[in-house]
Every structure is written in C-alpha cells, then in structure tokens.
Length: 476
Image 1: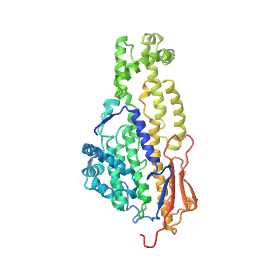
Image 2 (image 1 turned 60 degrees about the vertical axis):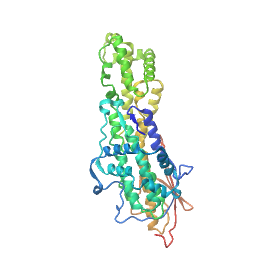
Image 3 (image 1 turned 90 degrees about the horizontal axis):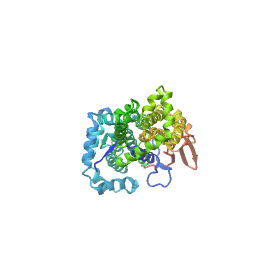
Image 4 (image 1 turned 180 degrees about the horizontal axis):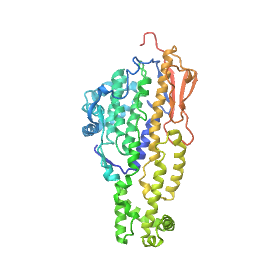
C-alpha cells in the first residue's frame, strides 16, 4: 500500500479534482440520479444551540504536530489485508439499512488505526515538512494519498454509529474527519488541498445519512459553525505558482548570456528531465525534440519579442535558436500562469466570469503550444480553485435542509411554502450565486436546488428533495 506521489502531477491533480467533485454530486444509497432524496423528521434546535459542533472543541485538542501521527497511521494501514480494504469500500456504498453491523463493529471497534486517527486529528497544528520549496515538482509527498484510507475507515465507523443512532458518538467522529480535511490544507501543494476536499466530501456524505436517520438532532448551527472555506486551496496555489523555479533553480540562465551549443543542449536536456520527472526518459527526449521543432515555428516571433524588450539584435542573433525560443516560451508561460492565478483570491461570483474567459484563451494557447513545455506543468489550477467553492456550496445546501427541519419542528411538522417563511435562523446563501437556493414545494415534496450560473464550469449538482415523515405520538 505504500506509495509516494510527486508534486509534479497535473494528471493526479485532475483525478483528485474529479474525485472531490464527484463526491460532491454523487447520489447517496445507490440512487440513479444526482438528486439527493431525504425523508426526514422535523428537528428543533438543540439546547444549547452549539451542543453539537463539527470541529474538535478546544477541550479535546492537544499540543503536537498532527502530520507525524497521520503518517504513523499510514504505516499501520500497511498491515491491512487487501480484503479488508475492499470491505471498507463495499460497506461505504452499502445502503445504511443493510449495513452488516456486527461485521463492521468487529472491524472498527478497538481499532488501533482509528486510535491513531483520533490522536492525529485532535492535535492543534499540522506541519507536513515537505521538500517542495527545495525540490519543486521533484519533491515526494509520502503518505498523503494514503490518508484517504484512514478517512474511509473513520467514515465506516461513523456509518455504524449513525445506523445504531449513537448520534453523540457520530458527531465526535465527524469532528475527527473534518479536522483531518482541514489538516490537509496545511500542505504546500494542490494535491494535499484536493485530498482534504475529498475527505471533507466523504464526511458530508455522512452528514447526509445523519440527517436522514429518524431521531437525528438538527445540525443547522453545527454546520454554520464550520470554518469557511471549509478547505482552502490558498497554500497550494501560492507555493505552486513558483514551483517551476523551485524545480529548476537555475532556469534563470535561459535568459542569461548565450551558451555554447553543447552546453546549451546539456542544460536544456537536464532541465526538461526535471520538469517531467516521473514520466521517463522517453518523454523527456520527445519533449526536447518537439522544442527543436517549435523553434522553427516560433523563432521569428521570439527574436522580435526579445528585441522589443530591449535586447540588442546582435546579442539575440548570437544565441542558439532554441535558447531564443525558450526565453519567449518561458515568458508566455509566466503570462498564462499569472492570468490564471490572479483570479484565485477574487470573490467567487466575480471569479466565475473572469476565470472562464481566461480558460478559453488558455485552452486555445495550449492547442497552439503557446508557452510549451512550461505550461504542461501547470496543474488544473482553475478546477482546483472552484473545488473549494463546490464544497462550500454543499455545506450551505445542507444548512438549508436543516433550516427546513427547524421550520417543520416549529410548525406542526409542515414544510415551508418558501424559504422566506423560515423564521429565527438566517436563510443560507448559495455562495456561488449570492442568493438563497431555489425552493419549490409540490405535493408535499420540497426541492432545494442550486442553479448553474453562466460560465460556472464545475460539477457539484445541488438538488435535494425533502419529505417530512410525520412522527407518531410514541416517537421521540
């Protein structure tokens, strides 16, 4: 089970984005559509309002570095049998009513792995101690992907606690899961942030099940109390903006004095090998060959580009043709990198349109090999930015479901005719649109939906159908 991924992993970033977004929109309990159907009981606000919280309270936290304990847990997980790992995945997909409680209990009760998870998730800080700043794309991230195995085992325990209606225990376990997701955002790469988002979505799947369970307490204020954004991509975006320079520290020499032909050839071959670390020598050779071909295409433009920026024509003409082209392509890479990155801290509703236009232009540039080979190492930046907003949208939608349960508890178990009828709690806002979610009530079925804004290029469908199951007099 041991493995270590490279920071230089655009493909892995893309996979993790798709996994985190797929979890955000996947229907629960085997439903065929993306609509999440909730049959729920009315539930009033707990007393006190924050009796339940979804992050470890200060009284539960301990000094220490969580990362050390997570990595210890990953080592313990190496002892898991393949069939046990397969059972965990199978039981996470099993309808809650069909969960084999005895078998699951035998796996998760007194589990040394879960004891290690609790030790890690209750630490007050998390420092992953990577070598990204020294080695850039060549840095290894041991144990990061495997942390998801720990999260899945924890999620299975939560499912058992929910199925047995041990709601206090389930909330305490959820605290560990959300803390784990938050700890991953402390890493310095997009990969770590995306793993954190995937874990957060695994925990939100459990919130879905929690809310559906008869007698479950209302989590409106617990969800409201979660940090926003729940998992931030800022650390990864900030560091990976400079990752090319970290990987190839002397890349600035491209823009320096002309090199002798053989010296330039060696310098170029070694640099491209660093950029495409993990993809093999054949890929590096292909890249070098393509660069020579691009030199013929771009040289006139590249030559003029350097002259326009103040280089004497003679100095440009003394450089190897591929060096002139590389300088130009490096400048184009930096242009496109910053055109994407500049939207990362813009409020989401303003970000959507600007980022979409930039993506369209960048896609065209990539097709024309503008900025190649450097833009090949740009991971799925825009998708990573949107992934944290998709996660926030899901939390807001669940808050809306819980607000509806609050209304039903105060109004004879009746669904509200509109979200405006909900009193006593703020109506949750869809962070993507800046407005409350769409709401319709037809024949006793309420639908909460998040419309797709223009230029919103993300999955993460938001649509819940809610039916209030009337409590009988002898039900709590």
